[in-house]
Image 1 (cartoon, rainbow, N blue to C red):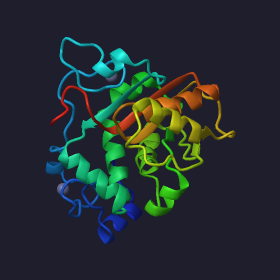
Image 2 (image 1 turned 90 degrees about the vertical axis):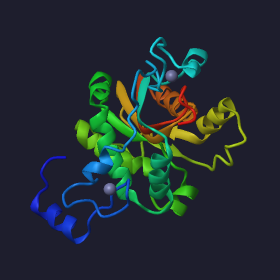
Image 3 (image 1 turned 120 degrees about the horizontal axis):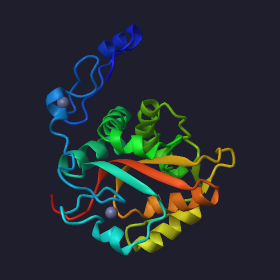
Image 4 (image 1 turned 45 degrees about the vertical axis):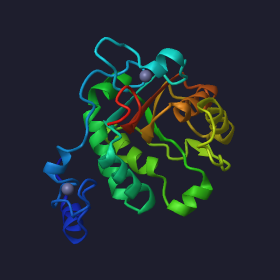
Length: 242
Ligand SMILES: [Zn+2]
Ligand SMILES: [Zn+2]
């Protein structure tokens, strides 16, 4: 977590950040209680070589990646989406706890350091939230998570690298393929986004990969050949009922 400068230290005392696990004030100069950090559910065993979902020791790919040809290159979701993570993410998205995104993004980057070293992204792009939802939520949680990730990597952050232009409607009733098509139609790359070789997409959770694939397809059309992702949580895999 590094040393804070004096200004940040004073701010920490005046406005202590809340811990994303117990929701109490985090100890000064820390963003999370040490004992709460130990409760964060890291994926315990082997991961899918493509999407990072938990797999059995004998498997290389998860069932989903064995069946689906993903557009993105590779990715990792750091924590299992259990009740604790669900509550933290709900508070972040709907209760204005932007600091949870910043804390979880920083922790996710630290935990995924070996993956990030292998991905070698030249820039970080958050998955965009469309404007209507942005108004309701006042901020894009993916951007809050992406900020410390870009800082950790020492690469540029492009909050507007991808733009979502219209409501994608109620997505719950759609199949993964329909959902992907829907997102792909609504998202476009900012014409000012440099044509990098490798970029890292950041979001709160990876589930089917439909969103990542749609964003990756858009970035590929923009000329970026390798698209990686980092998410705070990963859902699904064989541990569906954790
Ligand atoms: Zn705590
Ligand atoms: Zn997979």
